[in-house]
Image (cartoon, rainbow, N blue to C red; front, top):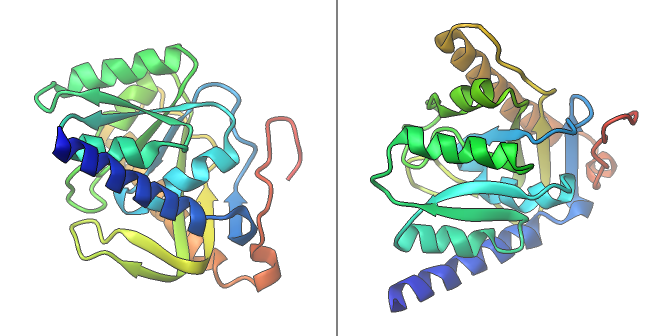
Length: 227
């Protein structure tokens, strides 16, 4: 119990730090199109979680849904998600992948967005797990692939080389146009999604080289509006 309380408190500190460095005035949003109106699956590489969780409520008015494990790790992530508009839903660590994906499908049907780090929770780094494509097909839901970059920043020395913006950092977040996956083979769909994730990460990095005034918070286009 004490361990879980400490972990949740640590997670809250991580979340507060993320929100403090990802202030809107320092973020450049690079959106390829208006955001989709229906419930959406948001996907990124695990290394961008700190920025992604902080930015989500700045660009989306719909509440999100994320699966977290039980135990100390889950308690940390639960604290981290507080204030992010992303609801943590604990799932037993021995739950089969199909059960987790069905829970996510139910969330989309209930009007929630779903947020997935597609190479998590333990890697390998930038190797896409197939669940996001399965979910997109099963729920007929659009997918937004996004990537993040920051400068100055450090990379945490762990499997995902987690991106940690330093105080005062400029941040760029690149988001794809909505992706859909129909009858195409799973292998091809997974390749297309992985390519989109790498492309958005590269776009975000390129966005940091824009003149500083262009990096101040730029509104994300909403459905039916022009960029």
